[in-house]
Length: 247
Image (spheres, rainbow, N blue to C red):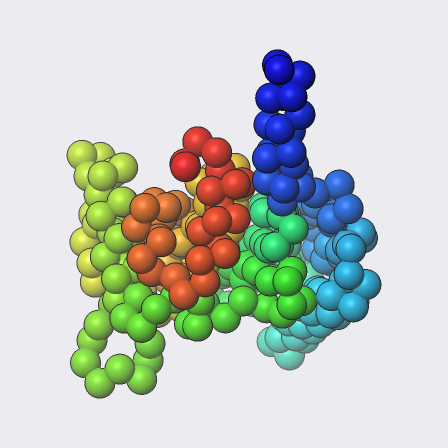
């Protein structure tokens, strides 16, 4: 009887294990840093057509990054400055990989002979069921994100949850008045990505350079709240599998 129960349990666990740690779904490289980086590629996937679509997206993103790098260097030349006025560095890390979703964090820092260096995030999240980029404006329900076409200022529910989580984490230790800064920020186009190690769906506002390093915390949106914000229940199911402590 015990043997039968054990076999039954394995049968129940196999689909979840396949989603959480898929042997036939691989990305390489998983982490890379430098001036002229190569973006990761999907190196193994059950559906060759989806794999090709995903890698086409990543190839295009890589080309865009390299074009921006060349443009930065050209700005330095046009300003008649030497290469001491130029710097470019990109850190790329695969933060989430399941059978359904892939998320890659892309952090860049650049200096193009301007008044100060700049930095930015451009995370890539792909739906591996279709091989297409996730459009967060469609993944979230109406009223969750702030959009530029709204007639009145409205930050949306995601901004409110982010601020509440930020205050819960840092409310008693806020010497730079980051809470005030975040209250004033319009929360347009925040960086959104999936991270299996950091808590699931992550959010960070796109703050101006002078305050981003101090106030731009990465905040995980609690699953019990996220479930009411998204249109695709498969995302919540996937996160519950990938984040067993958050079930």
